Image (tube, rainbow, N blue to C red; front, side):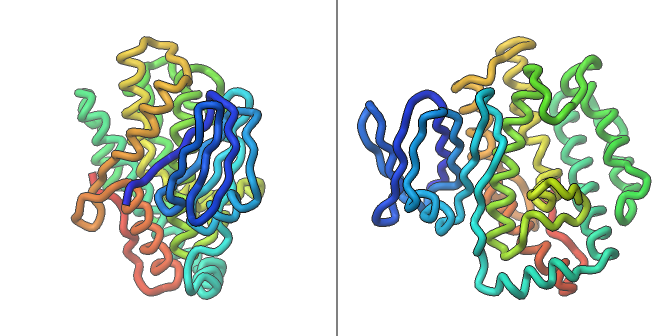
Length: 296
C-alpha cells in the first residue's frame, strides 16, 4: 500500500469523503485518494473547507489532520480516538504502568537517540563527538541527563556554533526543524493510536498542557532523520532557506522514504514507529522490559 502525506498550502481546496475515498476539489479539478493510503493531511491554506465525513473518515483510517498557522507552522492535530481492538485494556495498562518500567523504557529511547545523533555526525564527517561512549552510560530514567549533554555536542556540529535549538522559534533553521518534527510527531502519534495507546500519557515528557507527551517521547530517536534533511537543504540553498513548497516536499519526502533498522530488519519509518509503539504497549503492561528501538 502506498503511503501519502497530503500537504495543502498553496490553493483553496474543498475536502470531502465518500466510498472510502478522500476527495480534494479545487479550481484545477478533483482528485481522489483512498483513505487507507493517507498517512496524514497537513493544512496551511486559510480557506480550506471540510465535511464532517472528511474528519470522521480520516479518524477511521487512522490518519491525523495537522492544522498550521499563518506562518505555515503546525499548531494543532486531530488524531483517532479508537485505534486497537483491546484499546481499553491497553489504556488501563498504560495509566497503571510502573515508574521503573517507564524509566527503563526512557533509558532505551535516550540511548537510541544519542546513537542516531552519532550516526548523523559520522555521516557528516564530524566523527561521533564521543556520543557513542556517552550512549553506553545512559542509566534508567537518564538521571545524569546525558540526552542534554549529547545535544550540546551535537547541534554545533550539525548547524554551526551560533545555532541554538529553540522549539517554536522563527529563524530559518528552527522553522524547518519545527515543520519536520511536527510531521514526524504526527506519524508517531498515528502509530501509538494504532497500538491502542494514548499519546498524552508520556513515559518521560509530562507537561500538563501537552496532549502529545508520549509521541514526543517515542519520536526522539527519529529526529536526526529530519536534522539530516534540514542540513542538506542548508547546503543546497544557503543559510536562510524558505519554508516553501520545495523545502516542505524535501522534508516530507525524507520521512515518506526514510528507512531504519528495527528488530534486525530494515523498515519504513511508518513500520518502525508502529512496531516501536506495539513494543511499548508490551513494556507498559509488564509483558517485557525490552523496548524495540531503531538501531543505528
